[in-house]
Image 1 (cartoon, rainbow, N blue to C red):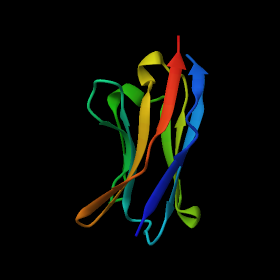
Image 2: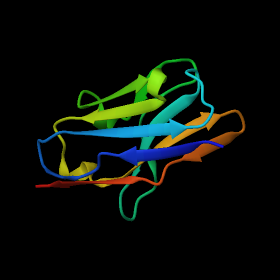
Image 3: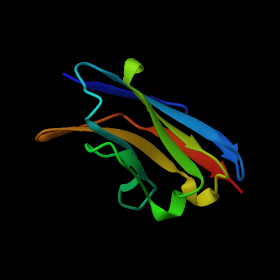
Image 4: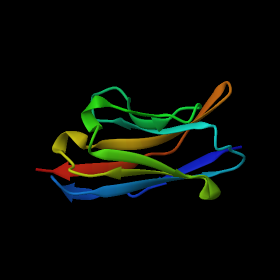
Length: 115
């Protein structure tokens, strides 16, 4: 069984930075797809940034150049460095791990950006 625990969410002013962490427990592999999604009130959950199973990275257009996803396989942890934050980045951020035939989700961490 895999568990994902996110941390790092906070209240920050526009233009500020945050780093989110997602620690995975259980059996995972460096080739497993992992990524960050977010859901703002009244909106659908959307991809923010992710590692694909092929090892590539994908980003939402809205965060390109501002957010960076990274991974420490030795620690089973994925990070999301968020710079130049905007009020529209306010959302609950979720970590997702995809293994064959199943997706695991974390509980989410709140990011609030004030203007």
